[in-house]
Length: 246
Ligand SMILES: [Zn+2]
Ligand SMILES: [Zn+2]
Image 1 (spheres, rainbow, N blue to C red):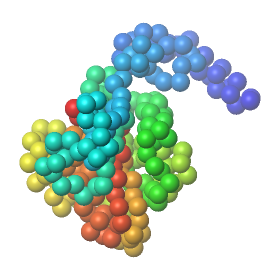
Image 2: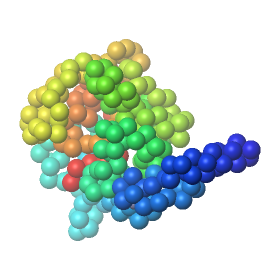
Image 3: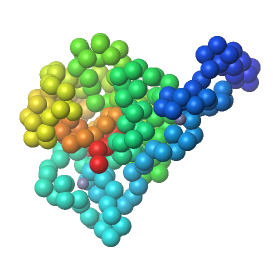
Image 4: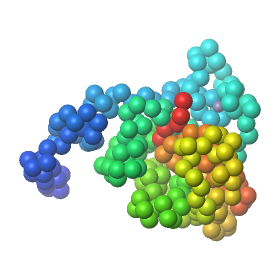
């Protein structure tokens, strides 16, 4: 109780000198706001809604409301993960939030963003069989430069919320390729090939693993992580991201 009062007091005090404003539209925020965005901006986030493609989790038009339905992209592709799910569509506000979080180190976004993942997982994921949560790793050079791994921060909150084991150092990135954003899918697949390594195979052996990342675009990175983990003896990999490309 005293802690809460004290925190509110500190927040009000700081607010006197540095008024809190929405990271997107700069509108003033109430000191009691639990996120660095105003409600108007926050409510513009576009969520992924069911029905989902059984494999990649992409929203399907209502006429395809068939559990067995697999979207056209997934019919032509083989993934090493069993399924992928994303909370939002990577566009608009969430895209801006992820950029602010990753490239501008706006770590005040971690809690509200991981809460979106936790809420989604409660609704749409079966977390009972998940034994291990592993964030998609950054190459050590990039992690040093950024000083944090956004996927690890999100995965950490998720693991705590579901009392799951988090392993952020088992899967490592050993090859840093060109920025994925600028590549086509085929180039992405090639550039991530062999980019990851499992440090201690015994610890993933026969495990059902939830792989966590902030963004899924073509699925090439998640796919390569999944392939690497299966090669090391894991039983099943599912991917869970905050946002995916349309
Ligand atoms: Zn705003
Ligand atoms: Zn699909």
